[in-house]
Length: 127
Image 1 (cartoon, rainbow, N blue to C red):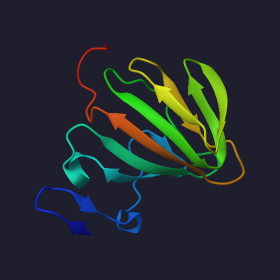
Image 2: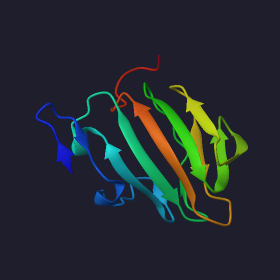
Image 3: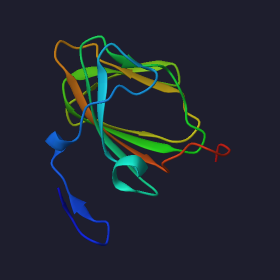
């Protein structure tokens, strides 16, 4: 990893280990690329996720966080406010605070997607 005294850095994705975060099941793995614990970020959580077929995250909502999902490979189901939508390569999803959602891999190959979340914590009221 190349880093600057300013806190800026260049890192290869292979250097970041896969993790299974709470409420993620069946091979729903993520690499936390930029977040407070890995990069000292204050406003962004940026990760790449890979869900094996049948893997999923439990239905949930965020109080203040906004999220963007960007599908890179595979296909699955994104549940938004109780309605399922097929998502596949090049689809992106915007989720404002307070919207219940879940994503699962209903396809035949790994579902790979980016997740960008701001702010990094979900404390506070729905805006």
